[in-house]
Amino acid sequence: MKKILILFILTPAFALAQYAVADFVVLNEGTESDYHKLEKVWSVYHQKAVDAGEKWGWSVWKRTANNNDNENAAHYVIFNNFSSQEQRDKSMKNWSMEKAISMMKLGLKGKMSSRTINNILKNGDKVKKEVRQYQIQWLDATPFVGELKIGDKMSFAAMTQKMDDYEEYESEVWKPVFEREILRNNHRWWALTKIAKRNESAYKEPTHLVWNIGVLNGKPFIEDDDFMSKAMRSEKMRDEYRNMSNANELTLIYKTN
Image (cartoon, rainbow, N blue to C red; front, side, top):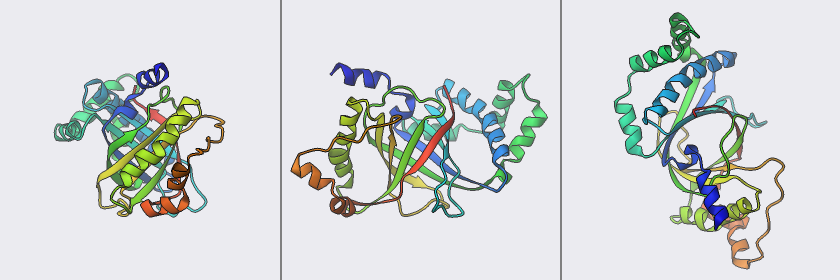
């Protein structure tokens, strides 16, 4: 019990947020350097927004390329995390580009000229080829071990629900597997999220996203001897409950405090 309490105490805002906006960013060729300049400028605004209680957190993750990627595979994923959809909606209602730019310039005073900031922001539309945006609701999660650090790895898989009780299947069959490994210091976090809204560019098929953060040099997971548990985790049962995409790896490169 003491160990579980410690895990909850260490849980970061990223894992506690109940609602998030995930932007899957596809870059135009040769624009990665400009993209980093853009995010570094925007990071000043996002930190001030977190400090003001307008959101819980912001982070940028670089996706590891796969051999079977198509030409519109995302290069980066940006998360804006909120305590609720209401907080997100309030933040958007009160948001203005003019105010955001003013906050950036104030935060970068003495470090970057106003003209340079304007040029970086103006170039933003040329950097991004496409942004697939998903608003996601956090449904279930394990405790989170430790704190997120730059360089941490996270994986995700897109799920397409096939049965009405799919969410219960993830929570009752798969969540306990990861909870057990967390207690063995062999995993850090598992979470189930549901796609609540998406923009026109976003893929239409997925209904949920499952997230995992493992440990460095992790050991094989313990096999459960319980017949029913093993049967529910079989490939046959997995295929009955949902279609699952290939897993993708992300690396944390920027985040708010």
